[in-house]
Image 1 (cartoon, protein in one colour):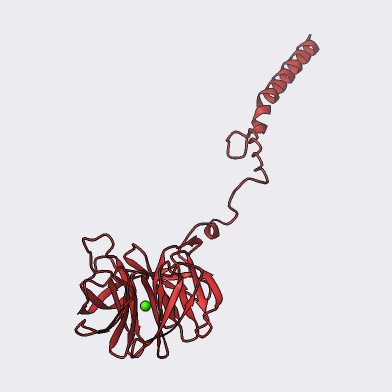
Image 2: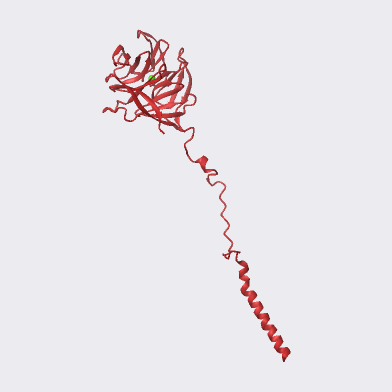
Length: 294
Ligand SMILES: [Ca+2]
């Protein structure tokens, strides 16, 4: 019987051991920290054509060297300006301004300090005066939709020539080598100052966005300053590629009650670095200084 009891005891012991082993088995599926070791679902692979940015910083618009610099202004001096002058072109030379007007179209020589019109040539009624540039001793005046430019002797205003062009005429300036002309689109055209043939063209853009209504122009220290029709700001344009390098915000400088009386007219005195601006039917012409907005 003793042997029988021993066998029974051994069997009970065996059952207990097997039972403990059976209870203990799931524990082998716990991770060392005791958390569930349930396998995580396999991450769904991204489709290869999914538009997931690979490098966020480079695909996020941020300020960069291509972003225009924003400028504000201060008024250094205020001069009288003929309130009947619908200013379309403006040039400074040796103490006087040369001005081209539309509506009542004219070419003028104006004393800077007093605003007095020293010399006046009125265009025939069918012509609408536009951009103006000084090339040596000649003044070159565009017309809006007449497709003709007039060339005058600077001192006498004698008409000494003309040439035609296919586009409208808006703004004109001279960089010392080429005439630069706008036509109200986003294009600027370079013209030979002797033959008046088109020798180049750039498209003006702010980043990748074309900027249209490019109006009065002024060449300033290697850049092209441009009024934008109906906007109270001036674009600073890189003449190499048409990229806008800066914007001069002239908000508040003068506001007329007439909707047509907008900012237009930029002149630069390269000898002293003075920058002048005015507008159509404005009573004032301003010498301004620009400074970056920090
Ligand atoms: Ca000008």
